[in-house]
Amino acid sequence: MRRHDTAYALGLLSPALLIFAVVIVLPIARGIVVSFYDCQLSNLKNPVWNAFENYRRLFRSGQIFSYLKTTLIFVCSTVGIQFIIGMCIALLLNMDVASRGVLRGLFVIPWTIPSVVVAILWKWMLQPQFGMLNFLLFKTGLSHTVNIAWAQDSMLSMVSIVLAALWKELPYMMVMLLAGLQSVDQSLIEAASIEGANRPQVFRYVTIPSIRPVIVAAVWISIMDNFQMFTIIFNMTGGGPVEATTTLSLATYKSAFTAYDFGRASAIGVVWMVILIVAAIYFNRLGARSTANYQ
View 1 (cartoon, rainbow, N blue to C red):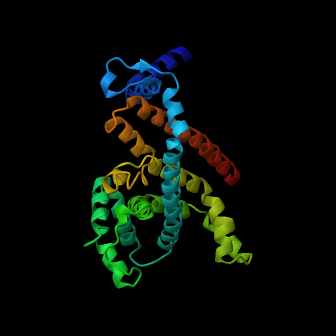
View 2 (cartoon, helix red, strand yellow):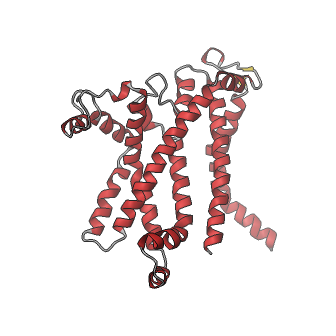
View 3 (cartoon, rainbow, N blue to C red):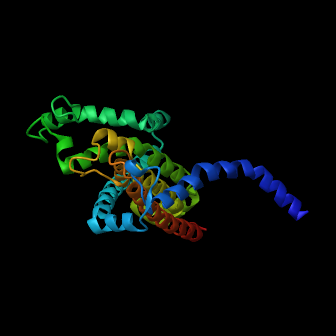
């Protein structure tokens, strides 16, 4: 009977497993194989086996470390600011304030806008001569000139893509944290207040431990989302100036579709995948530990 149930279950799962294999497993396997070949546009039909040469070139030149550093700066900046602002907004919306439902709807709007539209919108707002943000900075005295060339300065170009990604992804973090705050047992907060705990103490010792599993999940999903961010960066800076905003996703794209070096692009993709797998294992363990401690 158990064998029959197993066969029946596998039969029901087979369409989904087939789609998963074709869409996910085969491209990953193909990418890993190509990373061991000298596969360029000139020898696309007859790639040459070169073992670990693509990886050796990446690490020997130090480019992979530069791409990884840029990616980590972008991800840490975006996710860190997302969490801080998202928590503040979630705490505000968790209070009994007027028009709370309307405010929630307004805060979610940027999340619904396509990434390419977000990139164009922010590129327009940061335009040197006529950009709205430059005008506001100048009028408020925060800048001595209205002609701020965001795309031509390495630091400002990073700031620009962080701002755009933050505006786009912040609603997700806010929604996740708000859901966690609304699930906190109010009896614990009341008990802590009766014992003499003030609001900061209640937040630190009751609220945060109660929503720690939600925090871990929200931060991890946000890290993955920003780690593979492509559309906003590509459309705003194209990875420039002088590769100042070239993340792993941009480096993979440029290697494959600008330099037509598919072996190198695949090698970057494999390194990228390994980093995410290691991070996923860490955050899964962290999430399991947080859930166990909470229970």
